[in-house]
Image (cartoon, rainbow, N blue to C red; front, side, top):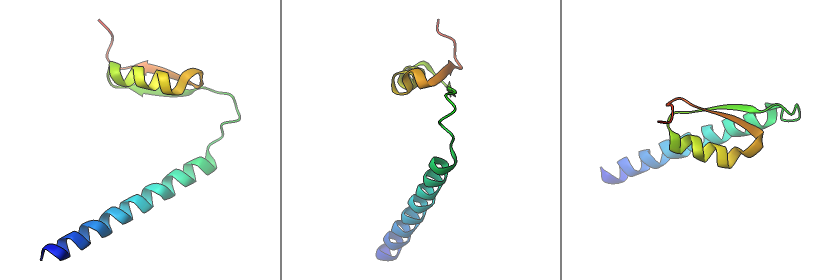
Length: 69
């Protein structure tokens, strides 16, 4: 019983990773980054805003949903 559950879980994880990889590959293929436009990013709270700003640098425009107090 336990071995069957482990096998099913491993299969589900493999399928999920495969689908995710396919989506990333498709997005990288179809994305036009040569236009020079900045990518708009919406952060839900300040730590995510700060992280996105540091990672994206001058290539993104970050907006924080929760205003800083």
